Image 1 (cartoon, rainbow, N blue to C red):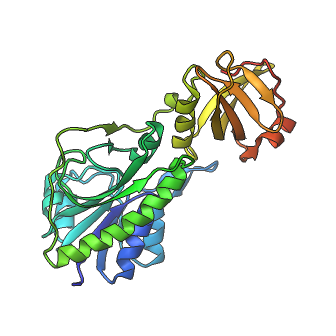
Image 2 (tube, rainbow, N blue to C red; image 1 turned 90 degrees about the horizontal axis):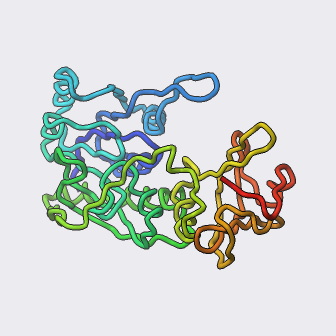
Length: 313
């Protein structure tokens, strides 16, 4: 395999294994692009992105422009004299001058079976929709939103107990290996591009805060998928009144049952918590109050008692 001169463009934890594999394979990473540091935590200190931290630990030059639309940024990128750019959940739009700058273009790792789940949250949306299969794809980037031709793909089954967290980790490592295969084939001139189908397009919109609230009128099977798709973040939640306070509680683990009752009604509260849904019920085994660590249902009930017949909102 020929050694390629490349830039890596990524931001979250999902991207880190790909960069690690590329470094391990001996490619020349001349620049790492990541989103600018964000203020976070109680002290609102600036936090580097996971990719930025990894790159800094490996003495790689890191660039964090707020945008790549300006001529100066585009000229600086072109001056890197790249064979290829590898893009993994970067989070910024790449204008045409940036896409065209590397000799072999820009390769993107996307965590879905395109054209299904184009966009920002493909892993969460696949689980929330009840999909039984997803995958990772290497795509030649163009100006449309995840519309470019597919170069390599690997299909992955979604297990009945998968959360977005567990599936995220699995796809990240599979995607890292797939990207290495793509770069090896690219260096040999052996990559073949296949246009995406025109049918079956769906969009994985960013998860909105409001949709994380649990709607107990939905079927239990749908809510199970909803909860797993939003675990660990942002977390599917319900609220319950305690005196003058409304307490928000995230459900971290649950499973559907055949029990029935009024939607939102607590049917049992002992070793587990059973709540009626529009169809069936959910048996909840792990919960998390705001600002607290996740705990099992029995421990949760010791600090926050619930009674059969109560209603959750």
